[in-house]
Image (tube, rainbow, N blue to C red; front, side, top):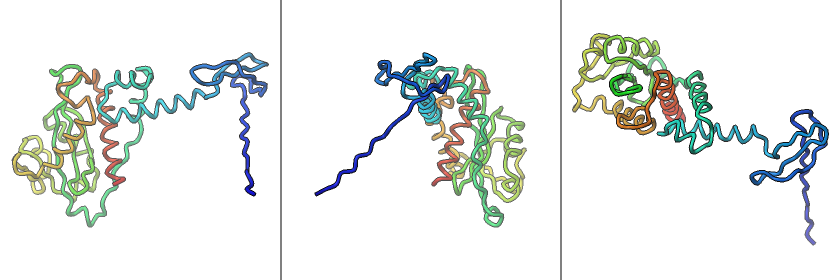
Amino acid sequence: MKSVLAVIIYTQHFCAKCGSDQMRRNGHSQGHARYQCKAYRYQARFEPAAVAKAAQYAQVDQLLGARNSQRSIVRVTGVSRMSVAKRIKKAQACRPPLPRLRPKKAQKKCWEALDELWTFVGRKKRKLWRWLAVERASRRIVAWTLGGRGEAAARRLWHHLPRRYRRYCWYFTDEWKACASVLPRYRHRPCPKGEGQTSIVETINCSLRQRSGVLVRQSCSFSKCRKMHTARIKIVIDNHNRSVILN
């Protein structure tokens, strides 16, 4: 003879306004039961709104790391455009996942590849260059910045590099004159395009273009202000660094 164990799950609901447990069922809404408080006459669905909103925001954060515009995210998730913009600004305010630095002995043989990528804000006449510094051994993005293509942006990227990467690394770049004026001459290795020394950073530039719509030159998904442009690029770069650290 087999014994059967029956488990009864009892869920008790409380009013969100007054905290009373005197609730009664009062119809359905979109497949979910509605409950009404007998004391306060407050009516709500069984599924908490905070849970549904958290699920929507998680989907928004996932779509922001892909090649989607803000309006396409609004159409897919049903979240308002202002809420999507707030999630972008919140991601920009978060501290990025800094890649784990190598030990000092290993960093003496570290090689860095630097390159710039052309983007625009608002219209194509407002050009903006994104500078990138990538560690060739691990493909981690160590530093990046936005600006022009001159010496000022290259110097800003140099100051964004961690201190150890400014002391124990060799730097491979293309033959752009701004890099030669900023990087140390005895550790800078300018290379022609066909030599292949900067192929890793160019590959990462291509993959970032595929993951972010604001980096595509011929696209309707572009940023109208520099602040949102920086935030969208930061989300994609942080996701890239997280994937490198996990692997």
